[in-house]
Length: 588
Image (cartoon, rainbow, N blue to C red; front, side, top):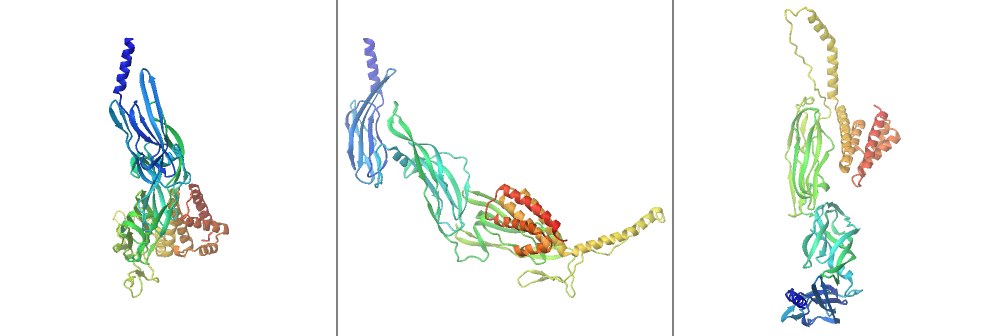
């Protein structure tokens, strides 16, 4: 009997020392005015004098319903008492469910007020225990745009974030619709280190995760639309049922969320103050023109580079062209890209490299090159100019009757060379020194060397004649240079297999230089009909000419359409085969 009394005393004392919990839990904190919510006032002790709030702004539809439970586990007791009401809002806006009050062992306890957001009526109202409504309230997909009113070709950022309330879990999602960026140049930014972060949504605490990031460059002016990202999300949401420890049971619901369309109003670049040299560069850039050498021999080549460095639409802009005297042979430029793209846009450098071949000696001036760009942050055009560059070419200059120099300066600043002059590169005067010694004179070696010199003299004269002929052959030198460049660009195309842009640029340059070497025409004269006509006159067969034309068309279309690595490999093998067949067919 004493042991029973001690146990009862211990249990009663343990209960009296237990922490008192008195809470208010609303089934939802956001409802429509034609919907209902459930609110439960719960205590973990047998409290007295329970007094509910006045429910100002709400109508009590049902309740209170009272529930009491008590359990014993391993000698420890626990109990729960609750009062539940179903409420209907009487107006829209932000309403407050004030404190409920109860007393326990002479002490008064109060719940925390509950804030409820009441919206306008919906077509299909749902009950207070409908979990899909809770899913609607607990997960949101947002598209954040850095600038909704950019200039044409100005970079903007789009970041897609999914916000999830702290009482909700997400087990996975499926992408139903991907965002479409029509009328934009776009690139998705790889974000491998995704981490859940804490933030707020509509003033309430949420967790969020960055799902996707993209950088866009608008290519048209006016109102452009960004199509939405839509997800089917598996959401875990709490129910009104709780386990023994007071934790709510979770249920899984599917929720379709969409970031919604975003409208971008793209401004045109200002017409006022636009320089004549402006070619579409938008950003903040540095500009320079340089050559790898300023002193060289006639017939040698040098490289002239036009470079732009900075941040902006580097892959979408045009570089100014190199101006050169007519007496210099300038080949089509080779583009080198060193551009990185991140969430803030493109940055790095682009360079056009020109191969320049002076055929004769003299001094040549490369005129200044002008580059203009628009800075969207400063909303202003800027123009930069390179300085003149002097080239000194060692070698004989052309001769002409009554003229002291073949280089003339035109009114527009270009250097002009006379077309009817002939050039001589090889000096024919020879200075011989007597090497005869008294012991060497009249010896066998003496006569052998003397006789051999007379025998070699015709060969030397023949070689010199060939060198003079080759050096004065301007057209032949151009043909040989073009043929050498054709082979070099074809080899470069092979190295760039897999890089769509560089591969087709190299392949096109190889084909153009091949035509230069075989047909003696320049790039500006390479129309489809004229090339086919000249190849036919040279003996090119119709099937081979047709395949050659298809290769040129592939290089042209590749600027606008993507190609797979397999397609690039087929075009490379086709180019090698067609050029070999064309070499066999064309008349020498």
